[in-house]
Length: 66
Image 1 (spheres, one colour):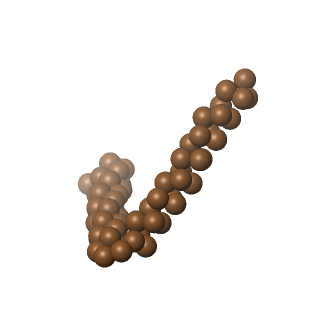
Image 2: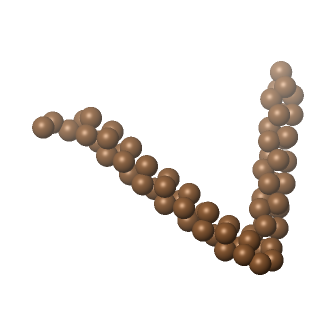
């Protein structure tokens, strides 16, 4: 029973490691690739922060008495 879950977890961990290596190759690539990678990362981080803040605000407003 334990080996049924260990194999998919090993595959997932191996895929994450391989993905990090591929992203590192792109991030240190030639030309504008590092700049595009950085801009994409900033856009994703900003949008996650905004929507996270809005979600926390809406959850907080559920529990406040007005």
